[in-house]
Image 1 (tube, one colour):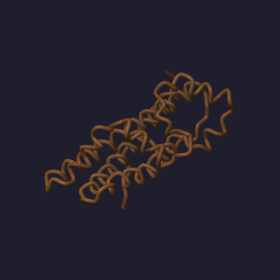
Image 2 (cartoon, rainbow, N blue to C red):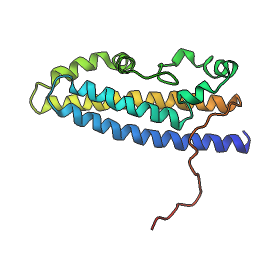
Image 3 (cartoon, rainbow, N blue to C red):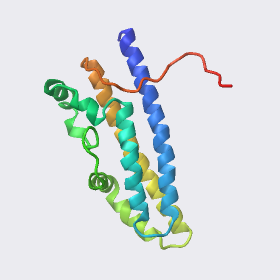
Length: 177
């Protein structure tokens, strides 16, 4: 592996870690919304959080719709051909609440019912509902990050230029005043 590829991989690893922190923060927000015993609020909050979060992750990896539209049909085929079997459908397309809801249900359909029923059990139910919400959002977020990471890595191996956000990687910590 040459120096340029190592630098790109390191940059993508930093982006992946940044996105994981962001997903963890948003998962806590989801858990907080799930504690409130209002039917449907938790699912609506999850969808709203993901509608904002997923485009941020896509953009950080250079996989936002505008960047992907700039690829030629040949480049797009190269990028997505080997990846299609795992594609959740959340990269490059227009995100809709229905699309996000379908992915959420596919990841944890049994848990969604548990979460709704659990809300009505005092104290313990709210905690259980919050835990399920945190788990689902975090699981979907991390799966999406790994999909973006894999595609961005593949793009670089194929020589495709994606405009991922390039974090500054230094060996020495920076000081802030």
